[in-house]
Length: 453
Image (tube, rainbow, N blue to C red):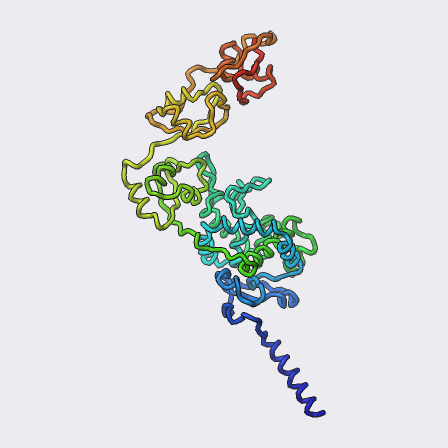
């Protein structure tokens, strides 16, 4: 009996020692040794801490998470709360969610090296790489119902001072500048909140709102704040969704989908002081045009602005492109962006600026001369040294028959516009449009019958 008691005590002592030291799991030897995090870890409840296993910050987790046998974990600053687990299980049950995540990661390939390098530079949690999946599915052209644009979803009033938007560019679609802007915002949020969950919440609903909630509820961590519904519903859904997506995306290899990151591009910046047509550059440098477009999604046209633009090109083409750009003969012509006004025709614009009609149509695909709409922006090669386009025949604001009803009918011909018809009948575009239940900027088509004076 005494021998059995001693064996039982020894077994209990061994188990206690094992669990107190943390034990190990299958594949633990493949994980990165624990290192002190470079960013302070916010204080969390013991219950939450027991659910979190740590990987040091600034480490590229994708290199260790794909196939090792240990548990699926997040960085030490994140905890796997029940609501995160619920979101994660929802992803595992949804083939649509899984497909969307994988498509987003395919889109991320060209930018992956740059974004991960910036994550390390800013000392952010490595899971931030997966935040654009929740924001935009890594689509530079994504636009939210509220008007946020780009992979990091910046609003027009929140993109300054990192980005600008004008007739040539919308830099919210610039992967380089928008990533820097996003990381500086996240870093600022963290400096104020001292907690990465609150920093992410502030990225979604605003720093001032989060700070107010923290100040009026001292001592409560993010999860307790969320449980009390003190933050917007969208934000409360945003955080667990992001953590669940990050957990899923970090372990694709275990789910039978090994993503090849070999498609990531090392981008180099080239300052430009003159416009470059990317189509011509791609042809001369023997580069796939889509590669240049992927790196410069902020461009409104496939042509860079007249001056002060930074072109982004793959590293392996840098010497060839720089040689081409240094050759004066390969510098492209100047372009102007013209907003179509009443009475403007492609013929008149061609006559003024110099390019033939075929060139105007080439640089403005989808434009039809007979249905040119007021307000349309045209990209016009400037082949003559001339000033802005001026309309040769001003439009009268006075209707010469303001009270007489429109009793005649006119059949629209090829090349007609409301402006040309109004001028012929000595009335105004506004009245002609009104009498025909049209707007002044609406196109008209050959064969349409219009009421005229």
